[in-house]
Length: 389
Image (cartoon, rainbow, N blue to C red; front, side, top):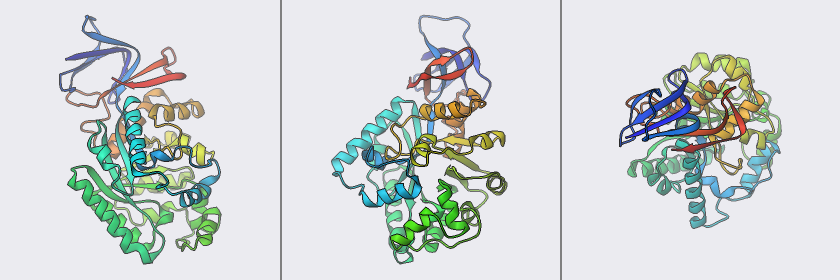
C-alpha cells in the first residue's frame, strides 16, 4: 500500500484537493482519495501537485532517430519536402530501435503513461510490447497516386495484422485530408469508422486550406513539382473533406488544428459528438511558427487533448512542456483545465478512460508529480517538472 500526498491533488474528475492524499493498493489501484488528516511515517509527501498520468495523444515513435535531421520553421510544405528527401532509413535498424527505446523511457520518466502513436511500419512494435506505457498504434496510410492505393492498403493491413498478432492495441487510420487518393481515403475512413476510432492530421497549415479552397499555395506547388496528383478542389477548408466521410459515432481525434476557424469548429463539433481536438504546440511553433487558436477552443469548451508529435519536429517528448507553452501564450486558461487536457480528455480520445486519465477509486491511472509550481497562483513556472511516481 502507498499513501501519496501533496500540497494539491488534482483528481481531474473533481475539484482540486488542498493537502490531499491518494491511497493505492499493492497493484497500484486507487482505494481512497481525500484530504490529508493525519500524516504518518508511511505517507509520501511531495512538494507541488499530484495528478493522473499524462496521455500523449499524438506521437510518431518511429521517427525518434530523426531528431535534428531537418531545418524547421519553413512551413508544412517545406517540412514534407525534407521528409521526402531525407529517408527515415538513413540509419540502420538497430540505431532506429535504440532511439525508439530511449524515447519510450523518456516519455515514461516525464509522466506519460499512454500514447496514441502513429506508425507506418511494425518497427516500433517490439518496443511497445515490452513498454510500461500503454500504446494505441494508429496504423497510418497515405498516398495521392491511385495506382499505388492497393499497395498502400495491403501494407496497412499487414502492419495492423502484426499488431493484432502481438496483442497490441491498434487501428488503421488516414494520414490527412491532403495526402489521400480517393480509394485510399475511402478505405482508411471506412476501416476507422468500423473500429469507431480515428486520428487524422487536420489543418496543420493555411497551405492545406489553400489546396482545397483554390488549388494553390505551397503544398499545391510541392505536389505539382513532385508529380503527385493533388486532391480535388472543394471550395472549402480541408476539414470538410473529412466531415463528408467520418461517421457520427466514431471517436475522432483531429490533430494540430493550426488553421481552423470558428466556423470549422462549429460545424465539426455539431456533426461529430465524439470529437477531440489534439494540440501539439511545440511542433507547430517549430514547423509553422504559429499556434492553433487555443483561445477559441477554450472559449468553446472544446474537448482538447495534448500530443508531443515526434522528435523529427520537437526537441523533447514532454506533455508538461506542451502545457507550459500553452500557459505562456494563453494565461487565461486555468491549470485545472490544462491538466484535464493532458489526462482525461486524451484517455477518452483513445477510449482508455476506464483505467487512465483521472484519480478515482478503482482506477489504475498511474501518478504524476509536478514540482516547482507556483502554489499561490496555481500556475506552472519555467522550472516546473513532471515525474512519474
